[in-house]
Image (cartoon, rainbow, N blue to C red; front, side, top):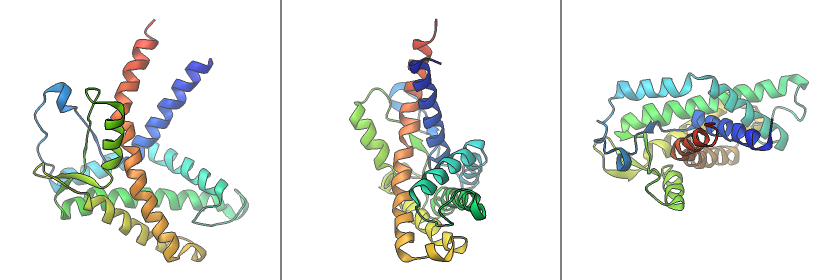
Length: 216
């Protein structure tokens, strides 16, 4: 495998894993397609969105990478220093998967329905500057749309992440059931939701570049 091919494959894997954790679904770029705005999602459609973004193999793979990183850095939840002793890594993997699933459930279904927010991601697309798109994608962690299309604070994501962090006390080990861990967990989830939006924003551009680059 050449270096260029390897970089491309790792980039695709990275984007795919980010998509697995993303809070929003990929939507057409209205600026480039001329498509009319999507109709507001019903609570049933929000439930279906939660199920579709959660029941994918990438959810488990993403949890595995997160668990590996936190195991290496000895971050909470703390199940032990060694990977395999007392099944520390597998416990961490289960806790990480639980965090991701509960965040999706609370943010994209429960709180999105309660606050009447549409958490689906709408791309800015290549008609905008790179830094504008990046700032926009990350900002969606705290800014979103109501079901009627108006801009609003992203209460669904912020409160959903808080509920997920609170629920983690039900399965984290006692040493990790502290207010400090909960606050860090909450803040990390909120920030991570914004970073994962980089995947649906720039992923289609990368796919088109790869198609042109390796067409022959």
